[in-house]
Amino acid sequence: MRGGVIRFSEMEQVIFGQAAADAVKAEAQRLDKQKVFLLVGKTMNDTTDEVDRVAAALGDRYAGRFAGIPPHTPRDKVVEAANAARAAGADLLVTFGGGSVTDAGKVMQVCLEHGVTDMAELDDYCIGTTDDGKVTMPDLRPATVRQITVPTTLSGGEFNPLGGCTDPRIKVKQGYRHPSLVPQSVILDPAPTVHTPEWVWLSTGIRAVDHAVEAICSPQTNAYCDGASLHALRLLSSGLARVKADPTDMEGRLECLQGTWLSMTAVTAGVPMGASHAIGHILGGTCDVPHGYTSCIMLPTVLRWNAEEDAHRERQKIIAEALGQPGAAAGDVLHELIDGLGLPRSLSAVGVGPDQFDVVAKNSLHDRWLHTNPRKVNGLDDVMTLLNMAA
Image (cartoon, rainbow, N blue to C red; front, side, top):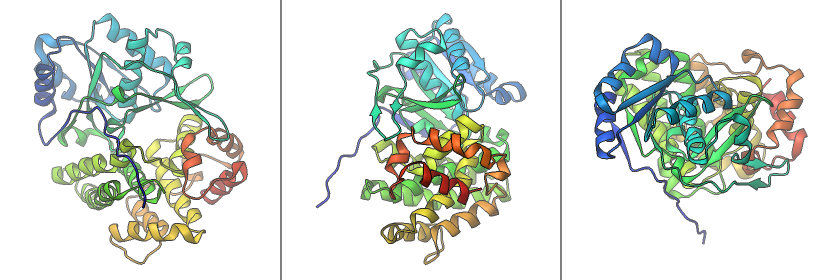
């Protein structure tokens, strides 16, 4: 008989279908916070009035904002934002934007708690992984300045106590983890997401699909996580198609947001991901490929590679069924879904060529999820095989 433990996060609540400005104001009041600092996406800040609405709703509780965290959350910008929040006397962070903004809020909490004022000081607080999969986890203190978040993409990091941040000196994305880094609350408002570029919305939706698929395939999954992951696939496949057909479809957008929430259940509970996520982290941090695109390219490839071993085909059957194609190969079903959304399907399509494969493969060995793929990845040769399959 299999046993296990379901680990719950320190998130307090998820608010959905309410206006972001009203929900942020209510949360600041509920948490009795007086200095609320906003960390926001630059496009959302500069081209819409959404952020100004939040600031106006906060009134005297509004302490300032930082706009402009680049993709993949570079350390130097995160530290700059943390220094601004510290100078403002922030007692609560509100992140309003995509996954890079959400991750920045998590690492800002580390900076504020540990007095980090220069990006080199973050060396002491990131997760380390050797090339044979041994992981070292720094002993972080609980964050005293916490975060709430309004996501405008579907990457799902807002439900996870793990934050990713790229060290620009070595072009490697690294992880920071503590239970207190998960937002205290998440606000799912579909209305601001109409400003998210279509390719970002759809591709990060496939990132959420990747969470659900790799969770279902993990040997460490369980019935609780399977239930959430399977329904996530149903909501995401439906919602993404609806928004592709009609970008003003708010119910479709909310389906996507809720599907993303469910897709993170297994990750939050401690189920490890696999090679699609691991290689995707490196393609992002090392080659500047958007993370949604990395899942579009690597997920079907990894599924096909895993399915070369009979033991991994049974779990993939339920993925195809949840996506409405029982009996089909899961890798093929995912390929059709992604292709139908007009998203890239190869590394060459996102500007990654064979001359970069060696560094990507070597860096992937230091991602802990490469070593939890359901089919064992035996070093550089296997990673190179996957990259060549995705070329």
